[in-house]
Length: 219
Image (cartoon, rainbow, N blue to C red; front, side, top):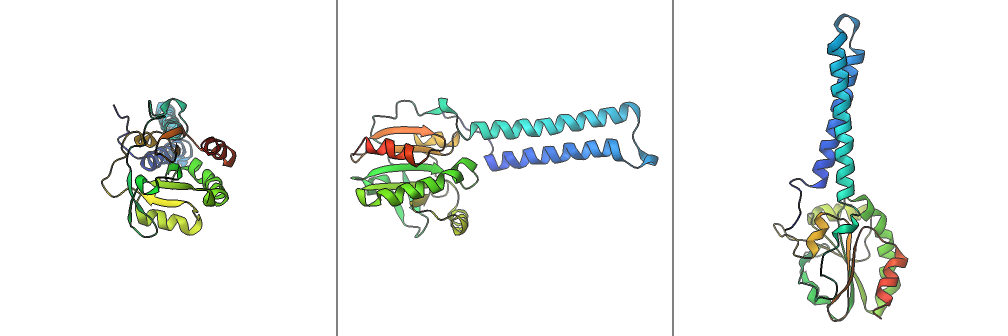
């Protein structure tokens, strides 16, 4: 069964931040309230303890969210490698035209699934840009797809240029198998050969050398 969280990572990070801010406020209230109204004894101790627990809960939530949505090595799509890549329909960010993976058949595809809020994804973008520039004329295409809105990605690209084919999932579209593993690990990359077969896949960010090694095996 597909593993999903009821809330998106940005919402979870926001909740974690609010918990930590709220906990800090409770600590301040218990310790620094004016002398005439200062809490004493058990009340002060209870307030301080509760504030510390709330801060700790926020830290734990942020850590778990980051761990689950970045590089969980156990979340490789089972049985995906060696099989034909299932169709994936998306729209181009630049023109809003519809595309499918089949439109790129005959090229080696580096399919990178990402999001603007994902820190490892942002670190990986320069590596993907450099790789695309180096191998564009050799029948190799990098396709980066996010499940965010077109406007969100366009705003992001004003400060973070993307050399790859940039796409987004249409509204109300879910990631099909095996691409749905991006819901637990971002970024997630699939290497698809010229015949449309998945030859490699991994969760987490990679660098130029790793992309090159995976692709040169298919040349």
